Image (cartoon, rainbow, N blue to C red):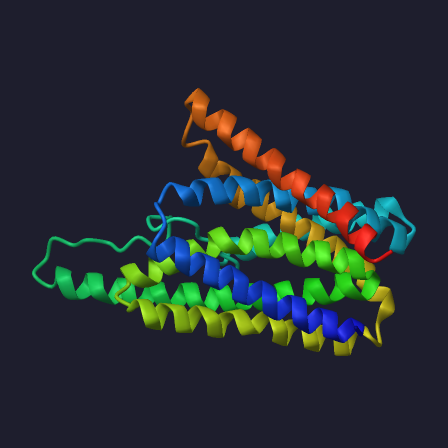
Length: 268
C-alpha cells in the first residue's frame, strides 16, 4: 500500500469506527461505560504521545530542546484556542458551556430550545474543526513512518470515541433525532479524511515541517488527556473508582506498547 492509501484508509476507518462505537454507546450502552472509555482513552493518548510520537519527532528533528519547546508552545496554543471556544472537547451532557439555561420568564421554553439548538450547532462546528486537525496530524505521522502513522491513528480513534459519545448526547439533548445525530457525526468525521489528504499534498513539498506537526500532535494528545479528560476523573474519589481508572489508564498505555510490537512484527 502507498502512504496515501494508508492515510486515507486509516483516517476513514478511524472516523467510521469512532462514530459507530459512539452511536452504540449513546443509544444502547449504560452511561457509566463512558467513564471507563475516557480512562482508557487517557492511557492511549499519553502512551502514544510519550512512547511513539514524541520520540519520532525528536529523532526526525535532531534537536530535543527545539522539539520539546514546540510541544510546550503547542500546549499553550491549544489552551488559548480552547479559551476562544475554537477547540472545545465536550465529554458529558452537562459539560460547561453546553448546558442549556433555564429561565423563569414566560418565554423560558422557547429560549431553552434556542439554547439547545445553538449548543448542537456549536458542537458540530467544533467537532468538524477538530477532526480536520486530526487528519493533518495523522498524515504527518504516516509521512514520517508507517508504524508511527498507525499508532497515531489508533490513539486518535481511542480518544475520539468518548468525545463522540459526548457529542451524541449533546445533539440528542438539543432535539436532534438519533438518525440525524448519526448522519451529522458521520459527515463531520469526513473532515479527518479531507484534512489528511490536504496535509499529504502540502507536506509532500515541506518535509521539514513534519517534525513540527509531530510535535504539535504530541502536544494535542497531552493537552486533551491532561486538561480535558483527567479533571473529569477526579469527580469520583472513591477507592474502587480510582483503582478502575488506574487500571484502565494503564491498559490504554499497554495497548499502545503492544500495538507497537504487533505492528513491528506484522510489517517485518
